[in-house]
Image (cartoon, rainbow, N blue to C red; front, side):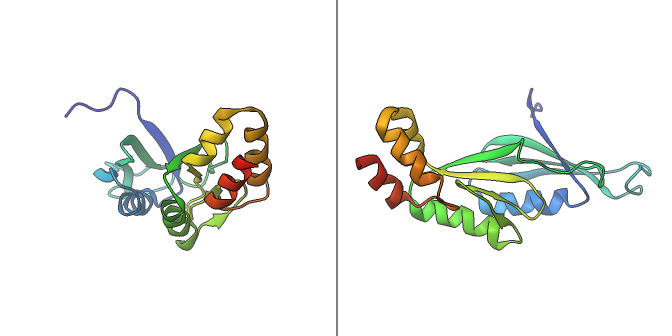
Length: 159
């Protein structure tokens, strides 16, 4: 199979394989497709250490690079995961936060490797797309949340 023309490269200190395996276990259409070891020593590792990991997250091709501690993840990059209901929202949120991650605001959380995730129910995106007072009410409700409460967003949409 030919490699993807565009692949997201994510920098990890040293745990790219563990992160990729967690994503593959957590999200559908996700898998680890290759683990590649360094052919010789490199600044943050030795020959034979895992250097890169090829994986997909919900069908999106990624490469995890064990580049060492020089660069950290930031909220400037996140995966936005669209969810259908509260149960799916809870499942992904709880998997990430419950595996050493941390909650943030407005549907954002970080996994234990520092990668940001937006766990975003479809109903919130639909409210924002509707515009006007409906979007304002949903947005105002969201601004008070950590994990998104689908019922509260639906109530805000109705006014």
